[in-house]
Image (cartoon, rainbow, N blue to C red):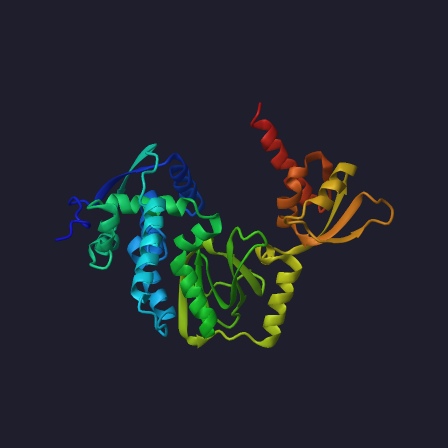
Amino acid sequence: MSHFGDFNSENKLRIPLSAFASHIIESDCFSFSKKKTTLINLIILNSYQTANCSISLRIKDLKNDLLDYSHKAKSKDRELIIDSIIKGKEKELISKYAKRYSSDYNWQITLSKRVKELLTEDSYTAEELYYGQKPGHYIRAIIEEYSRLPYYMREEIIFKQILDASNIAIEGNYLINITNTRGTNVIIKPYAIKTDPLSMFHYLIGYIDKNTELSGNELISYPEVISLRISRITNAEIQYISSGKLSNKEIVTIENEINKKGVQFITSEEKTISILLTDSGIKRYESQAHLRPQLMQIDSQNDHLYHFECTETQILYYFFEFGNDAKIISPLSLADTFRSKYKQAYDSYQ
């Protein structure tokens, strides 16, 4: 009888993690607004099927692939060849994932009912072969593997349910009711899930359904085209009986907004912004491409005065680190924002 899923009565496990994994988990708890236990349970539930450390599943996938590829082969040695390949892959996965990580910190977690059920299912007790009768060893391998993924891939795992619902709505042309972290609801015709240019974050892009009556009969102040960062969404409810099909005109509008502003700045309102750059600031602007706002024109009277047609958010993200190499000339409200933030930073060192 398998003991892989045996836990104490409170479903608690103490798991040692490397310093690297501990840092990533703590950071993601903050970034994704999740409690430690919630985050870890989500990691397990949403990544075990694709994780390389789920060795029995990866071996099963490989075996199925090899059988498909070799189905028409007539070689008498086919089974021996397949067995040899599988054993080699198994050895590689064991060496890479079922190993001893450094034990820098001990974490105590409470496993959810679903995770406990998962680890007692026959198809997953197969991991005992690689991790012994210790579910904590397998869970640790999942967490350590997760922590070494790029940020956007970790975001995909934590918000898998939101992304899955969004993709179903996109493919089925359904409306989707979104609730954000502030508790605001908005119903949209979804267009696509996209990442920013550096593939840092995921955004749900869509067109607000103006004919839909929201809870509380509240009027929405959003623009027609909206970009919602996935990690700021708490619930995504598909409206299966309502058509969310985008018109050709709406699709063109969305694509124009994406090309003009970038996915992360669509929702912000564009303004004409003038910035006075030093020689050093001009060199930085010309060489620093990430999040760089598109130049509308250089002033005809002063070749150090740059004019932009973009969002204040993009200007803040891009030019704030320029310090005295970039001075906001207009609008004055944005200049005040920069002045206030610089003063707060200065005051913190007093």
